[in-house]
Amino acid sequence: MKYMLTYDLMETARNTNQWLGSTMRAFGSYPGLAMNPAMALVKAWGEVTERTFARMVAKPDWGIPSITGEDGKDHVVAIERIVTRPFGNLIHFKVAGRKPRSRRVLLVAPMSGHYATLLRKTVLSLLPDCEVFITDWHNARDIPVSAGKFDVEDYTLYVVEFMKALGADLHVIAVCQPAPLVLAATAYLAGEQPKAQPRSLTLIGGPIDPEANHTEVTDFGRSVTMGQLEETMIQRVGFNHAGVGRMVYPGLLQLASFMSMNASTHSSAFINQVFAAARGEASEFDKHNVFYDEYLAVMDMPAEFYLSTVERIFKGREVARNEFYVKGQHVDFDKVTTVAVKTVEGEEDDISAPGQCRAALDLLSGLPDEKKAWHVEPGAGHYGIFAGRSWRTNIRPLVLGFIDANSGAPRASQPVAAE
Image 1 (spheres, rainbow, N blue to C red):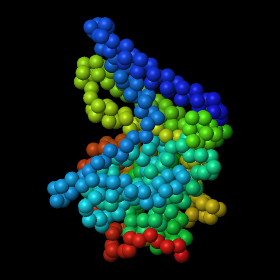
Image 2: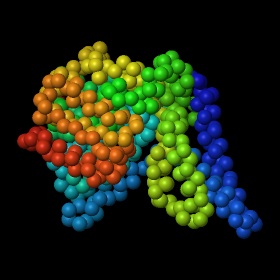
Image 3: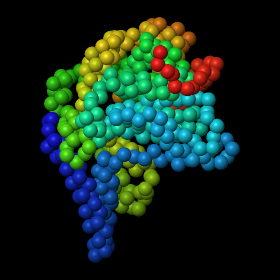
C-alpha cells in the first residue's frame, strides 16, 4: 500500500464520485426531463452525492464571524496566529472591542483525521466567558517532506511549546485523542520547567489507559500487528500535493473506518437526505449538512504519528504504565503535584469508554486528592461530551466551575522564559 499509485487511485475514486453526483444533478435538472417525477430523485441524489464527496477534501472554515458581548453589541472575532509551526499553529480567537477575559483556555484538538474545526461548537460555547486558544493541526499531505517527521513525542513537544508561549496563567482542555499526550506535556514541564505548568488540566474522553474498558477501537489496536498496520494503512502522498512522497495515514481511510462503525446510521442519513432534497425540504444549513460538512472533511495524519500512537499509547500503554519517554528522557507523572486535573467521560462513549480517561487520576500519585475531579455524563456519547447537548447543558458549567476553583491568585500571563 505504500505507493503514490494507491493514494492517487483513492483520490481518483473520490473525484469520480463527486463528478458522478454533479453529472446526475445536471441531468436531473434538464428541462426536457424535469417533468418526470423520477428526475427529482435523480437530481436530489446527484446533489447529495456531489456535496458528500466534495466535502472530503475541503478544510472547513471556522465560521465564527461575531459574538454578542455583555454590552449587547456584536463583536467581531478574528483569528490570530500566536505560534506558527510546520505541523500546526497555535491560534487565538480574538474578540474585538472586548476586555480580555480572565479565564485563558487552551483547547488541544485531536489529530485523528478531522480538522480542529471539529471543535467549533466547543469554541463558540467558551468564547463569551474565556480567552480561547486552540491547536490548529495541518493536513499532512500539504507538509513538504523537508519539514521532517512528526510522532507522539513531537506532538507532546508542540503542546509544551504552546503552553510556554501562553504563560502559566492558563487552563488546558484536551479533547479525546491528545489527552495522554497533553498529560505527558504537563508532566514534562513539571520536571523541566515547573513554573510553566498550567493551573488546571481537563481531559475529555481520552485514552489514558485503553485497557481500562475495551471498545472496538482498542480491540482493533490489539488484534493487528504493527507490520500489518504499516502495510495496509500507510500510503505515500501523490504528486498533486505539497507533501508529495510523505508517508501518511490518509484521511479517506480514517473516514471509511469511522463510517463502518455506524454504517447503517450513515446510510439511512444519506437516503433520508436524498428524499428531503427531492421534496424541496433540504437546505444549505439544515441539520444533515451542518453535521456532515464537518464529519466528512478529513485530513491525512503523518504515518509516524499514527503508528507511534497505536504502538506506544494503545499497545504499549506507555502513558498508563508511567513509562513514556520524550527525547530519551522519562516523563514522570509523579512529578505533577500542583496542576488540578479533571476527567470527563460519557457513559455511552464507544470510542473512549468510561474508565479510560479516569485512569489519569490514579496515574498522578503525587497529586493531592483535592486537586483531582472526575465526571461521567449519563447517556452521553463521544461527540456529546465536548460539543453536543450534554456539553452545553451539564459539562461546560462544570468545567468552568473547575477552572474558577483552581484559578487562585492572578499570575503573570506573559510567556514563560526558559530556565
